[in-house]
Length: 313
Image (cartoon, rainbow, N blue to C red; front, side, top):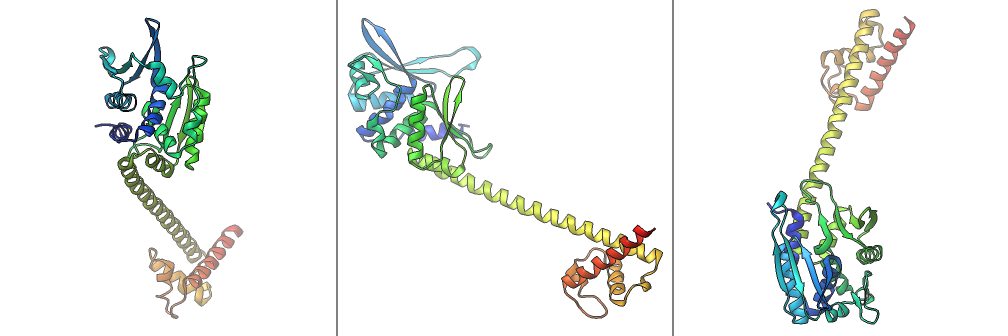
């Protein structure tokens, strides 16, 4: 069965987007998963992934935006049952594509690692860039089987900062942490993870996530109520047991007829009915019903008499 993260990514790869938004998504995919090689004094771009749907997405976006023909290469891993590697290779117009995506500075012929200002000025471009970033370096836990957690990995600090800024533009309360091999931006709150899935266009995954979250929260609430009720029942049983022990002590050492009439009838009623509640106990007294608080007051008096007698012995 496919993981929840792979289901999210499959949905994202099937979205149709406007060419301008495709550029933003492609910018994240290439910046995060792309490498450059030089052949015959020209750049060759390789964008690598283990997900065939993402590879097809990259291939389609390059054709859609730049009308260039890329090659799709599969490298089969025979050892340790590792996943195949899928490489989208672009051998023509690489400088043009990277410059247009603001990954390459054509004047200095240097690569940039930060998210471009053009992306950060447009909310729709930010959504598309975050979609590409999640496809390239994102993961999300299955809400049915584990704690809530979504993250996006970045190799560079300034790129990580851009991801964090964009996510918090959408009020997602994202946080960041440095790892030995890079950086991650992450979400821990279930509501914010659902909001992020909505932001990047994974509507079906968001609805599934919310369904699971609601059921889990309801189950947790029921469990808390049951635990609370069980604790209250245990406290009630313990209190009743203590009352009976104290009444028996008075009975054995002084006799119940040594008690005032009102306390004696409560003591006798409690011994005769050890399992009933205080409210029920108040309805069976010979002198007439009294309130739960009245019963509680008399039982406390009996406890005080027994404990006083025990302390004196």
